[in-house]
Length: 343
Image 1 (cartoon, rainbow, N blue to C red):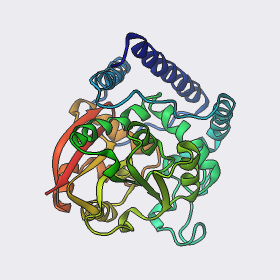
Image 2: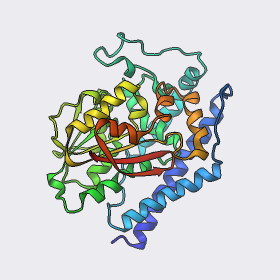
Image 3: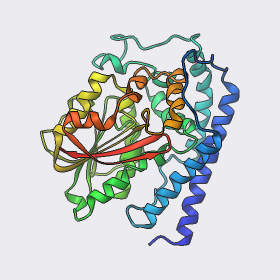
Image 4: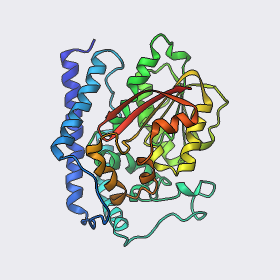
């Protein structure tokens, strides 16, 4: 069982992480030019105090699960201090380019057919106005810092809420017999947390970005229990009913409606009877009505071409259409975690 020292260590690490990225956020706000105010209706938004209180509750919820023995405390998932600082410097060096795209003074969108031939058109875009979209080593190195700054140090904690329904589902199962898949694994943050919690599982991560997969390999390290492959989420390279566990984090809101439906159908197709699908993604309209304004504002301030369609939908009904039955749902700060089984 975790000790009082373990709790203090966990709290200190999360506090330091939030302070570090909140500092980046504040500094970045001073460097970026103000965006024009939106010319469309905006729903209610939470105060900074409300967001801070909800973030604190997120960490408290995770600690309660750790103390209850559902899964271990997160291990350090980051580069060495010198590399950590280098990535911070790269983040700030890239901000002027991001800001230029936000204001339309730098138009280097990735046109179909001119870069990364063979990748789908919807994928060749500067999501979040980040340099090179998903298509370069430079982007892969910057991505985790960019996301943690956006969520002021809580992005990994939101992803890790996927571990709670997995822990419940694993009761009575031998983890070494579990074959799992992370769909759109990116730089491997959720996959690394899953492997750290249950190292006996046989896991695969798939993504369309070779540079992001390489970043995931550096993060996870050498292990025969985790395999990383370049593949499309809408055409999973697995047989029907061949996987016990399928997870995905912050993927669905990056997809057009048609592709999103195909991805969910593929998740259902490859899942064994009695298996589990766990999806972490953004809140949708109505999940927290008093926060709906944040969902209105997000695609205005960041390049998110499919986000508005995502937030006006319902993940539970999309899952049902794909042949999945919802077994649990939890809001986690600005995300939600939904678990499904085969209907």
